[in-house]
Each structure stands twice: as C-alpha cells, then as structure tokens.
Image (cartoon, rainbow, N blue to C red; front, side, top):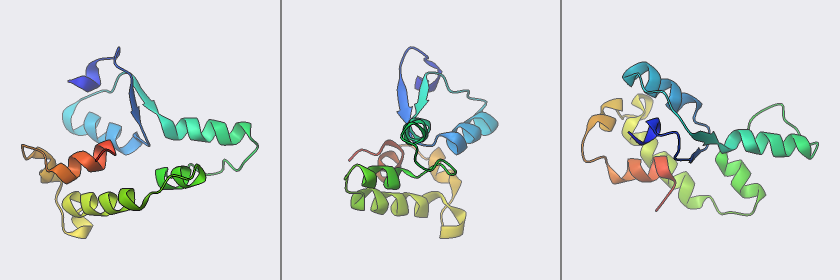
Length: 110
C-alpha cells in the first residue's frame, strides 16, 4: 500500500526492474518514488564525468568512501533466495513473513 501513497517520498536505487515487475505481476504503479541512480547520473554529468552507463550502488558508495562489504554479502544472500539461476525461486516473495534477508536486501538496512 505504501507504493500508492504519493505524499510519502520513497528513495530507491535502480528501481527499473522492481517497478516493471510490480506493474506486470500485480498491476501496481509506483507513486512518490525517487531513483538515486538517476541523481548519481545527473551529478556525474554536471561534473563532466562519464555518463555513458549508469553505475551500480556499490560503485557510487565506493566513490564516496562507504564500505560495501556488508552490502555485497546481502546482495548475494538475497539473490540466492529468489534468483532461479542461483537455485532460488520468485515464490519466496509470496511467503509471509518475508524472509529477513530479503527485507535487508530490498531496504539496504541492517
């Protein structure tokens, strides 16, 4: 329900695939979402840096000196739960309560 509430500002990194999946599987359109990956691209462009490709969150964090060791571990653990090519299944998102690793994977919190 929080995705429908446009007065609540939500910040994501690279929400393209998530937005696409939510719309096509559940007919959910996101409102009030901000994609920091686009902001990163704009900042790099304003500083005359390469903008041929959008960067990943880990790359952006490394530029600002933020450690991404924990983030990489959570990304790998989360993708093993849902990515079929890694032995996971998308059905894991239907299970309640949601697996704590998936909450951490999607929120970036610990």
